[in-house]
Amino acid sequence: MAGLLMGLIMLLTVFGSVLAEESKPEPITFTWLMAEGNMNLGDGIHTDKVAVLQYIKDELGIEIDWVTYNNDRYNALIAAGELPDIGSVAGNGQQLIDGGQLLPLSDLLEQYDRIS
Amino acid sequence: MKKCAVGIAAERQVLGGEEGEVYMLPILVQLPKSDVPNGNGEGGFKVRYDIYEAVGCPPVTTEDELLDALKMMQDYERERTGTDDVYALHWWGQGGTFSPQILARMYGSNDCLSYFEADVETGAPKFFLEKDSNFMKAVRFYNKAWNMGLLDPDSFTMDNATWAEKIKNGKVLSATCWGDQPDPTICGENAILTYLPGPFGYLPGAYFDCAPVGRGVDNAARALSTNCKDPVRAMQFLAWLDSDFGLRVIHCGVPGVDWDYVDGVPQFIGEARAAYEAGEGGTYMNGRTLRTSDAVWYMCTGNGVETDDGYPVRLDKTIEMRALSSTPAQLHFAHLFSEDFFYQGQVYDYWIKQGLVKADDNIKAAMIRSFMPALTQEMCEESDWPCIGHYNEMAADICTCSVEEFDSMVDELWNYCVEKGMPEIIEYANQNYLTTKALIEEMLGE
Image: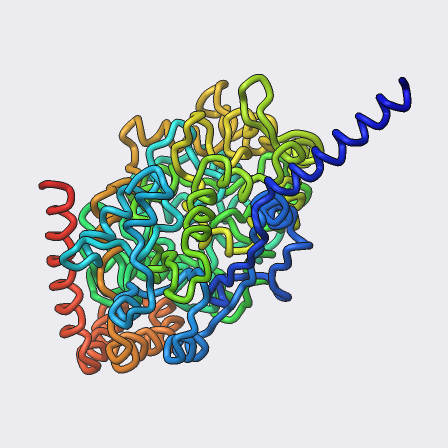
C-alpha cells in the first residue's frame, strides 16, 4: 500500500512538473535600443547580475539584449533598417515614423492593454 | 498603461497624423500631486539649514537678504572652525552651465530644447543667454555672491569630485545639487542641506517632477520597430512593465524576497528592509534592481504615479519607510516645523500650503514643454552650441567681474548670440511654442 502511495506521489510530482513547464511562456530575447549614455554601467547590464532581470527571465520568459548607441551608431542602424525590437528612442520620432521603421501601436494597445 | 493615458493621447494629437495613430509610448510619467511629498533628492539650490539655524534664521524673502544670510553663515562657520577656506557657495561643472541652470529652476523654469528654459507656468521657451532669462538671473546672483566674497574661487577649476567633497566635509554651506548631503561625522549630527522658502519663488521637485506625457528633454520614448520579432509579446511585456506589479519589481526588487504585502500593505521585507532601516537601501539595491542604472528610466513609466493600492511605486518613498529611515539631521530639521514631520518633503509641502513658495506643478505647461519640436542639427551646430561655448569661455569672467561691469559683459555675450543668428532661432522656438500650445489646448478641450 505504501509503495502504491509513493508511486502515486511520484506520478503526481512528475505530472505537476510537466504542467508547470508547459505553463511557462516560451523563452524569447528582445533586443532593446538604448542610448549608451543612459546605461550608466561600465560593463553593460547582464541578466545574471541583476536579480529583477533574472526574475523577468524566469517568470515571463523574456530576456533583454541591450543594444547601445551613440549618434553614429544610431544613424547607421536607421540607414540599414536594423532597429532593434524595442527602442528607447530620442528625438520626436517623426523621421522613424516617416521612414516606416516604427510599428503603429493603436491596435496592439487596444488588444493587449487596459486602455487604447 | 493607464498611467500614460495623457501621454498616449498627446502622442496621437501631436505625432499621430490624420488617423491619430500611436507610435511612441511614454516613459518616466510623473505627476506632482501626491499624498507623499518627495523632498530628499530633488534638484535645486539648498543651504545648510543647521548653520542657518545657528545664525538665528534671519528672514530671507529676497535674494539680497539671502546673500546677507549666507554671509552671516560663512562668517559664523569660519570663526567656529578657525579656518578661512569655508565658502557660502560654490559652482558645479568647472564654471559651465550646470549651477546657474539648476538655480534657474528656483526662479520658475525648467529645461527644454537645447539650452532653452521653459516657464513652469506657461511652457514658454527662452534661450539661456537672453538677458532676462532665469539662467542669467542666476548668473547675476553668483556675480553678486562673488563680489561679497562668498563664492569659492576654486569654482571655475575644480572637478566634480572635489565639488562633492566640499559639500561632504563642510567647506561649502550651500549647493545647487540633488541628493548630496554633508557628512554628519565631519559636520555634526544635524548637518543638512535643504531648501529655504523665501527668495526665489519655487521649490522644484517638492512633489514628484511634473512629467505627465512621459518624455524627457531629449524627447525619448519607447517604440516597437517594424523589425520586432513578436510585437504581441513585446506589447504585453511593456504593459507588464507599466503595471503596478511590474513597476514595483523594476524599482523594488524580487517579490517575496525584497518586498511583499504584509497585512495588505506593500513593504520591504528581509534584507532589503534591514538595509533601508540602516540607511543603506540604495547600496543594497545595486544588483537587485536596475535602479542604479539609468536604464530603468527608459523601460517603463516613472515611479511618481498613482497605484491601485494607493502606495508609491517605490516603497522607500512610503511615509512608513521614510519614518523608519530618517536620519537624525532630517528629524531635527523636520521637528523645527512639526513634531509630526520627519523628512524634508513634509516641510516643503507645509511651506507650499502656507503660500510661502510654489510647486512647479503646472501640467499643461509641462505637456507643451515636452512636445516642443527640437531645434534642427544645423541650428544647434551653427548657433545654439557656439553661443553656449562662448558663454562657457566667458563664464568665469562674467561671474567674477564687478557688479558695475556685469551688464556690459552680458551685453557682449548677447551681441555674440545675435551675430550667430540666435534671434531667428528664438523666433523659430516661439512659433513652435504657439503651435504646440494650440495642439495641447485642443487636446484638453480648451
